[in-house]
Image (cartoon, rainbow, N blue to C red):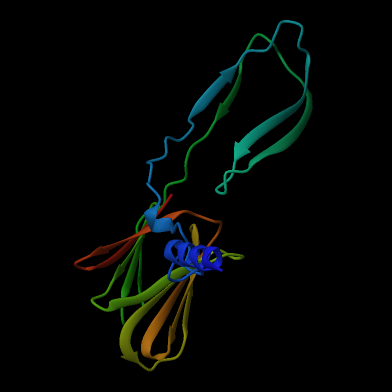
Length: 189
């Protein structure tokens, strides 16, 4: 009996207050500035005549290792290298006014200009989206704006004592939300 009481006390002392709260959140992850792949030259041996296929092995956001195979099946000249280049897409500055706040997009950063306090923020998958609730009494129709960048759509809805901003993306991203005096900055990587 004493052992059972001791076991219960130990398990309660190491338990978390909220077991449904994630241990690691995207904001707590240390951000590394990515060094993008730029170019690689591959010289094939002198007996190469037909390039059959190229296999790309890559790591996903969730750290899975996957492969993509590209079938070529064409003649090649072994004297000249095969050059693989990668140019990351840059996005210009995009501005959008939602009435109660302004949204700016530049490269992989989103800035929401507002003085309203953040009540909560979280993300959902399939499709990947970031949800941010701001404290302010509001009464307006839902606003939907589409974009032609990594940010596909923004939906803003009124919920009485707060309004919700939902940012839809083209893929899954790691992100960090920074509070600034002018609003919030969402940095994707």
